[in-house]
Image (cartoon, rainbow, N blue to C red):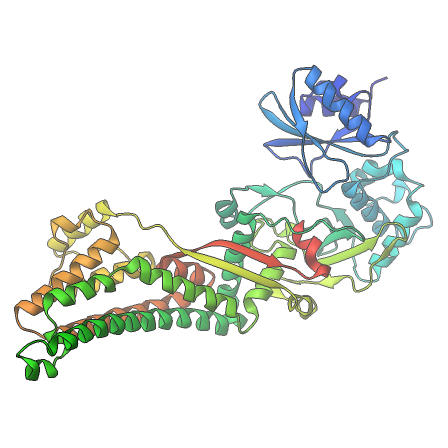
Length: 531
């Protein structure tokens, strides 16, 4: 007689029963998502049965092919009735012949913890009867291992145990925005009392997934953690001020370099003219306008300037003098802090265990800490973590509609609506150049230009004006630059006070974003980070 559970799974997956060739199968709630069903098939001849299932699917006209995974037997991937599916063939043929898979073994451990003081495992003594029922078929075969693991856990954890990791958990808004993943497998596998525990079987290694969006999201999450935790305030302040000072130093350095080249050109021409005496006292303000303009064009090539500043930001972040960025990366990677919206999905403790011996591995559990406060226990391992984040200049799009609004409001003597939290460094430069030019709103011909061209035009406009009235160009430039840098320093000071949003806002203000990241974890943490 057909098992009711098998019939129910068939309805959930929509796949025809005949493609499973009479083998036991079930849908994995933990591995499945809204976009894809993951079906576990039990077999004693995995490769052969996998190939037969693939042929059966194709015979039914179902789109399917071999996929890839870390398993020794590749899965079958396909699409049926507008729903993706993955069929994974695992060891074990009959109801009692098979071995528990990873999710089921979590249930075995949960049962063992709750009945650690009993001589025999029974449903009567089950705390979580649903979990017990899921793995009852594995007892008494796994009774000894379950009780042994239960006793090992009881040396470190108190309270009743419940399985948690059998389903997916919602991610935070930040994580969803960065990765486009609204749910993911939680870091927590079981909850013992008030401790969320992440489990890993000894032997074998998943290896870090290295997904670009995941690692970039981890970096942004680490920046949030640094901003919100008072003990990282020193690192936050150093990063912000180093980036701000670096911006100013680069601006002044580039300016002096370009102007000196202009002066040298005048000095060369000096010997060829009758005005040698006058040119001998040449100052910046006396450089011929045509020559100056050529150098000014170099000065206002902000795309090149921002590239240099982006390289500086890469170095500042990589420097990580305090080790706080590294610590935050490790904490977030193994616990799921900042990744998950549900606190229960965030792990507090890491446990590696031996399935055969029924013991915890040496050095475990590793206490992680809670609520973004990393424990000294976990910090010992983070020193071996290495990371590299690469930044790129964020895209600069014309903001025509915003500038038209700005012009209209300024012409009506109203305040420009951009608050400090919405400004970027180019806004500051434009605003200060407008003041230096004595204008309160942009000329019509500039409204539709991109930011770089607006700055270039305003700079040239100011130089022309100073030249016309016989003013000192050098003084005008240095005064304008001082106003720009003073304003930037003031804004960065305010950004530091934003807490968890500080570094993300700092990057946004300077027009950069994290484009990629690489993270290397110590062996003790690798699989917990890769979950």
